[in-house]
Image 1 (tube, rainbow over the protein chains, first blue to last red):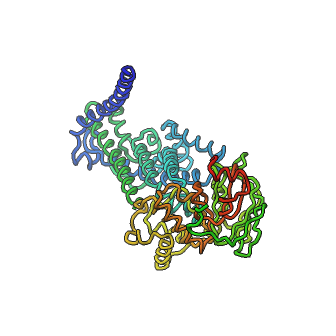
Image 2: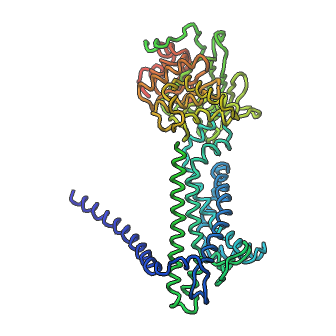
Length: 284
Length: 278
């Protein structure tokens, strides 16, 4: 008896230590960024152009750039990803080829982001002649996000009970009717959550936009989607490693990191709220 | 067996001969005609050479031990088995003289004509009203007045109206298990099928809810042809006019219910009925 209890105690202790370790690491990063970054956050920092070789001024163009590029990413990856997932899960014949396609998609989500970046250069910048622009970068990020969107959407579809599909079919609904009126309303919250999490990851990426449209220093806003742009993650990278006066701009780098983290946190929060709200509606 | 008497069985209906065909079909028309039907899940055969006739406006109970193929058999009539990968079938099932496996046949029409209620009640995550209206909506009916009328009628036919008339906009999940199952019956009735398939509709219900569903089935017989799979032999005896006993994919015996439960012609049937196995 005593041994069993000791074993259990030890087991829980190890598991607890794992959780503690993870939380501690996260907290240290967050606290570090908050304490060092909060000082540089003010209205000017958020709303002004960078000045004097980025040693002064704000990060407004980077915020706008990240927002626009994420928008393009969403426009590409949400409909395409959901459509692809619906086809794969509902219509595609369950066989070797479908399994191979699904496996390939999952593997694509593990491809390093720099590979997507270089692929984007070849496809969007050079071949499709979109040049280095918001569009090229957004589409590149969209491609990178697609495997996530598809996988998350498929998981959401998998969670719809078979009884909903069969029940609809048994009443004389066509397959598409059963999907549209019974399967999708139930699975869209899950699809959206997965997709928004994928987008928030894309918003924080540097490598895919590095060669496809992000600019080192542009003290004005992009006028169209074919312009180059500044983006928060790339700006942070520049401020932290590439700037000629790194020590001097350190507070700006911390401020940028803080803004980026808060932005992504807000997106995730939005995902959670959306899911919660849609779920409530669904059950009514 | 006295279990038969609650709703009374029409004893004037003649027994069947050994092939499973009706000895006399003057009382009512044959609604479903099954001839030499075989069904396979991949390599394993689930139904073996089944032949039987089901008459209009009767209740046919299908009994047998678990895994004997009763549910598979039931799901053939509206081709719900088509949703499973790797199934095959041979032989014929005719409804009103039309082969349901005919390539020309529209499976959507078939399923509208052959309603089904599943073992586990499966209300959709919608309001009570929308659940009942679902089958009408997918069949293209938009007229609000007609929908309202039809929903009310179906809920009344399913003996649920009085319990839900004040909360039609509430979620179907607010209902109790028995009410949910009657909601599913109402949903199936709304599209006006001619045949109703019930797959152990009362297996998850308490005795009171079960009694309500059984009473309902007895009422519905006037308008529909009903095939019901049940695990509960007393239930089969109470509600069905004919009973088919299945075992290991074979139809062992098919006869009027009173005969099956009092003087079964096969030893296996008798053993099962008297609880010697199963």
